[in-house]
Length: 442
Image 1 (tube, rainbow, N blue to C red):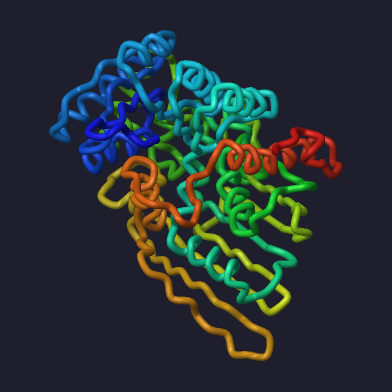
Image 2: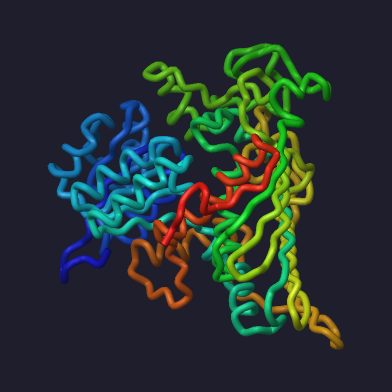
C-alpha cells in the first residue's frame, strides 16, 4: 500500500456509521500529506451527508457520495487505490471481494466477516488477485499488548503451557451491542465473532500460534427477554419518543448526542434502522455470557470467558510458562454512572466518559524462585484503546515501519474468526469442534 513518489494514495470508504469516524479523522487530519479521502459509499444518503458536514466542520472539503449499489462505479470513477470497509459485518465480504477484483487493496474493520463461506470467499479473492487485505485489529497496537508480546518472545517465562483470559464488558459498553444491529447473529456472528475476534487474534499473535480445537458454552442470560426475569425490562421497542424509556439507564437517548442524532436518528427514515432499541426487547439472538476452552498448534491451551453485563470493565490475561507466569491486568472503568458526564438524560454510552470512572493497568512477571516484578510500559493512555488507534493508523496510513508485524493480514483475520465460529458451532452441538473441519488456512 505504498504510494508512488509524490502521489498520495486515494482512499474510498464504504459504510459511514460511527465506526468510520476514526479512519476519516485520521485520513483528513493526520495523514493528508500521504493519503487522500476521495469518496463515501453507503446505502443511506443522510448518513453520508452527515459525514460530509462533519468534514466541513473539520475544515476539509466534502467528498463525492455514492449509493452502495454503485460501489464498483465509485472505485473506477474516483480512481481508488485502497478501500476502507466499515459496514455491517455480514456484508464485509461483498465489498472486500469487489474491491480486490477492481484492483484495490482493502483495510477492513474487524471481524473480517461472519461465517466460513464468506471467509473462504475473501481468502480465495486474495489468492486470485494478489491484492492485500488488512484487518484493523487495533488491540495489537496497544502498548500493553506490545509489551506482553515482547516479554513472551524474550522467553522470560519460558514455553507457554496455558493461558487464562477473562474479558468483562460493563453495562455501558456491553449493553450497546444489544441496542443495535449486532443483536442479530446473522449480522454480527455474535460476540464470539464481533467482539472476541479481537481477543482471539491477540492470543494467536502473542503465542505465534493457530487454533486447533475449540469447546465452548454460551447463553443469553441477562439481555433480551431474560431481562424480564431479572426485573429490568420496560415496555418499549426503541427509546426515542417513548415515555417508558425516560430515566431508564439502559435506554439510549439519541437526541442527546449530536453525532448520533445526525448519523442515526435523522437518517432512519431512509432505511428504518433504529440505533436505540430496547436491550431487553425480544429479537436478541446473540449470547451475553460465554466460556471457551481452546487448544493451539504450539500445544498451549486457553480458557476464555466473556461477560457482557459486568458492573466494571476490564480484562485479565495470565500466561503459565515453563519458567514462571506473566500477568496482565487492566481495569478500564471500576464504576459506571447511569448517565454520561454532562448529560441530563440518556444512557451512559461506550466511548463517552462516565461521571465517575477510574482505571489502572499493570504487567507482572512472576519467575520461579524469584520475587515478582512489575514490567514498565511506555505510551499507554486511557483514550483511543490505550493509544492503539493512533499507532495503528500511523502504520496503515502513515507508512510507519512495523517491526512487530502488527498489521494483521487476511490470514490473521481468518484465524481469529475461526476460533469464534468454532465456539458458535460448539454452542449449538455441545461438542468440541476441530478448526480444520470448518476451514483450512495455509
